[in-house]
Amino acid sequence: ASELFISELSRRGIKKIGVLRINNQGIQALFDEFKLQLAKTDIELVSDELFQPGERDFKTHITNLKLPQPELYVLLSIPPELEIATQQMLNMKVENISTMIYFELSQKRELFEGLWFVGTPLPEDGFVQEYESFYQRPISFAVPNMYDAFNLIARAADDSNSKDREGIKNELLKIKDFDGVLGTLNIDPDGIIISGAELKIIKNGQIKLLNN
View 1 (cartoon, rainbow, N blue to C red):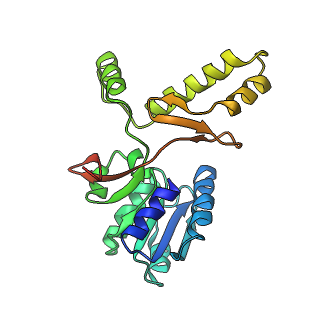
View 2: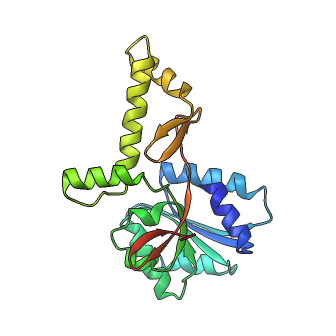
């Protein structure tokens, strides 16, 4: 996700960004990788504001973010802080907002209307249709990820001679180019599932591929 996001920043000619992020282990890992990739470019991280889970007043953070005049504000958070921070940013005339993945988690997508971001690949059409037909409800964001994660673990268990956790973990790390509903998947040495990424935009409350 970081590489595609930075590529899009370069394509748009954006040279200065600010980041508002929640103190969260997963988001910290994403942010660390993002900074590593950013250091290889001439794009500058001019402001970085960290907030704690449960915070509700972001005005001071937003004011600090605005001081160096970034061209784009990157919001890395999960609901409900994601929506609360976005609303306060919009109230303070900050409209050039983007993210990696997290807009997809929100049930209040009208807040992000017209905003581009980098998200997970769209699942195969057949998978979506089968799920919605069986459960009689729209598919949610995490379902394809969980489905692929389960099948990766099942594959590792099948391939493992020993059925203990350590044996399954070792087999899991050996899996390469797994054909999942989110595309081709690999697992890095830290056990993180690596999948593709897509440029997306919120249009009329719906997530669309940007190139469409």
